[in-house]
Each structure stands twice: as structure tokens, then as C-alpha cells.
Amino acid sequence: MKIILLEDVKSLGKKGEIVNVSDGYATNFVLPKKLGVEANQKNLNELKNQKKRDEKAAQELLEEMQELAKKIAEKSVEVSMKAGEGGRVFGSVSSKEIATAAKDQLGFSIDKKKIQLAEPIKAFGYTDVPVKLHPQVTATLRVHVSEKN
Image (cartoon, rainbow, N blue to C red):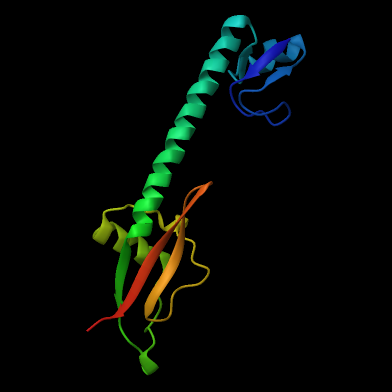
């Protein structure tokens, strides 16, 4: 029996795939647990329409993130830190502080996990920080670390 999977099933396949299973397995396990539906013409058309909607939504999200990346690249964020010995930053600037400053100053809510700092910023001045907004879109946020008076 051909089945369209509604969820990922470890031994069968991923969501949206059409798989061939034995009749007993389908009637006793897959169908009662609502892990899949029978692959008849109605369900195949529904699957095709769902895939089109998903692709369109993914494309719109990609375009939205590209616009946001352009806006982020045009602006910079200022973070004030205390100065330690030798004119260095007392402590360091982490991704959490950058995300908070971006929200306060620019109005962009950026998840701190998306800010890709190799290591915390420990010097005054300008630093370009990559922000991964989408698997295909990475923006560059300019961070200015200044001395707090």
C-alpha cells in the first residue's frame, strides 16, 4: 500500500514522502497513529498544493530576510563599556549585549544565537559582526564599542 507520510517516521522516511509499506503495517500502525494517509488521488493533489504553499512561504521569508539584512548593513550599534588597564575593555562584549543594543537602538529584534561571534569583543572601536538571519542570508552588523564615562 502506498502511504503519504504526515510526519517523519524513523524506519520509513521524512514528512511528505510517498512510501510503499505492507497493508498490515499501514492499517495497524501508520494510519491509526496518523503518521500517514493513503496515497489516493485526492491526497496526492493536496500534498502537491501543500508543497507549493510551503515553497511560496519559504521564498517570501527569504526575501524578507534579505531586506532585513540590507537594513542591518546600513546601520551600526553602539555599546558602551568601562575601560580597564591600558585602554582595553573591562570585561567583554558578548552577543547578548549586542542583541540588546540592536533592539534598543535600531528596533531590530535579533536573536543572540544568530549573532556569530567567534569570541567576545575585547577592544574599543568598530567591529563587523556576522548575523545569520536565514540559512542563505547572513548580514553584517557594525558594532562600535566606546568607553563609558
